[in-house]
Image (spheres, rainbow, N blue to C red):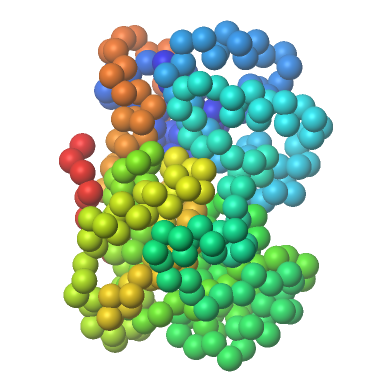
Length: 309
């Protein structure tokens, strides 16, 4: 049985539950607030699990400060240690704030990214808003802006828009900034050891010709290896592909943003999660089900499937 630790506001958890229902794969969905409570006999849930999907909404909120304010740190540490020690697959085994142990822009992150053959962007990991605005001032073109501890990744914005966005952040907010080379943005969605979906986006107002190199098999392998090296299972590698084929890693997002992921890519990612969590799972009666509506937002990106589902 698959255990989905997510509430009804977690889009990946809801989409996963919907597909498990359609495929008649047994699962249970449980609000993580209740599972963390000492009133729940968690041992009864652990027995017979084939995998755990760990949602990124409450109590694993978007910022570390939110997660830290939700209850005694000791109780949460015990619960996370129990979750991370499970012998079955867990997506993802992360820290209390829902963040990877190797944050974007840190020296350790840069070392791992470089070791896997990716270029590093011209970037700054700054400690406050004023420093960020000073870094942005001479920059032109597109900029990647990720406020500290945001689980779902940052935004690629034109420089002037990035300045306005950054100016609205809290004065003491840590921020990661990276210049984006003219060309294309490539999101590679990884589950386990596989790239399950590829999304290519053209930068706004970019007149640089489409890169000719394309997405090679070696690039897919390097991305999946990078995700595993960072201790993750489900992640988005955000790359910049320049006109001359240079590949720069802007970020590795531990909890990809569902709403910016095109519909077809969402389906591919959920299919990859099911394979990872329920490989050879028997068909049986469902334990639980959540119903939800489909996202109706229009997608204006090219989606390339890495696998058939």
